[in-house]
Length: 541
Ligand SMILES: NC(=O)c1ccc[n+]([C@@H]2O[C@H](COP(=O)([O-])OP(=O)(O)OC[C@H]3O[C@@H](n4cnc5c(N)ncnc54)[C@H](O)[C@@H]3O)[C@@H](O)[C@H]2O)c1
Image (cartoon, rainbow, N blue to C red; front, side):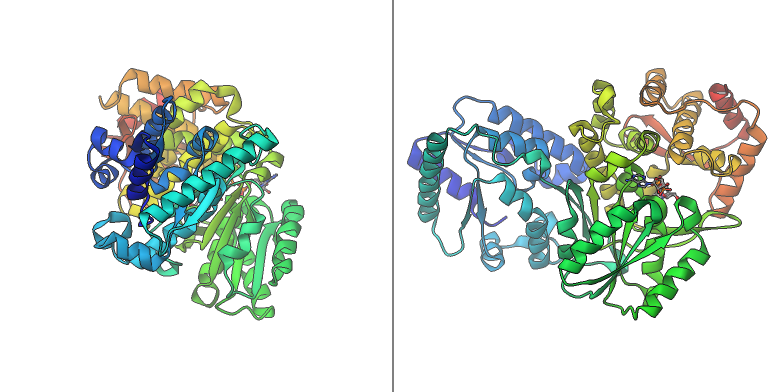
């Protein structure tokens, strides 16, 4: 923003007598004003439409000069396609000059509030992607339009001669799918660092950790279960090399770690290590670890920064994003906790290589949920590439993770504290929680949510809200992945008790999140408990 890409692009096209296309302008032509579309349909829908336009334009023979919106690089598919098609230039500019060129920057929704800070945050979040996608970077600060066009033409000549001399195939330099994807999350609340934080998804991300921690913290406590000690050692070495004083804090595995005694042990370690307010906590592990570590960070000296490095699929798409922390008590799960957004989330896909397949399958339930309540492309992807969705190497799983994180990021940005919008993320969870309780937490969360979604779909169908095809789609997709869609037929009294307790604990009425169609969740107050029993009979085996 403010680098002058449109005006430079037009001028360059004129000098080269080439065609000029601006994907933002094409978007406006087809879908109307970007800001309005963004607000009405959300970022995933905008990025989908933008991706379609880019794919279409890049496919034309006589491409000429193409100007792309700054967010286009957020999608790995876009990065791949543009880098493979031609000579890509990133026009950089100083913050001061960008804001001068933009004039009334506050009129742009993404800059509203504090244009300078927001501009700088967006640039920082995308910088790695710009640099990795572009063949050349030109700093346009202080240059006029013609100077920039000359630099591009010169750079292009060199690019062509390099290609001729080396005869290298176009894509051998960088495997752009290995470039990280950055998903910004706003709504950071009291722990807000630079107005929000980023979820970075990719491979080999350890080197990013010091940049997120920043120069301030000196001591870093890496909280992890023993099973992930090897990963923890690598994280610790990276931090030690970067000049931090990192310590490993081992906690019991899984739910055993989400106890007040474990939090107390962590506080003791921080105290004995003289942790100050400017030091930091890093979680390495699944959702249980990020919940506990988040709580420890939220409470130590009334809040120190925390970075999550999720190593399970559920951790990546759900637990590490959004800032909820929690521990269990004798009375129930997650009854004590706080909202403490992280300073950043690093989801390294390579960590999934050691994750048991049943954990991947369990995590996919939350991904499917994001597909039903918001991003329908998730469902299409699963249907089209069923054999690939549990493969940690596959680009399909990566795209599913990116899309699910984007859904959560959008919701959390609008509603950090679960007052309204965030409720839709509880789709399938009301019965799911009751099943987990009935099974004394020996049933995988994802499996319970899967059954809960089918139950909610049956309930919606029975009250005339949802069509048969969408109910069947729930079953087909979940069963295709290997998730259950039915539950024991003789447990209704226990489950109803669990549902009532869960609602009471959360101060809610007997209400469910239902769908009216894919992407249209509603809050439904249950008028008569017999409706629930009828839906239960539909899922009973
Ligand atoms: N805060 C939130 O918003 C939120 C959202 C959803 C779930 N949660 C919480 O998350 C927890 C569940 O998270 P989970 O499903 O990640 O389970 P988990 O944290 O219990 O991890 C599951 C198992 O996988 C192992 N593991 C983790 N990473 C591994 C890897 N890379 N290779 C091999 N083994 C690995 C763990 O040691 C553990 O045994 C629950 O406590 C739930 O309440 C929180």
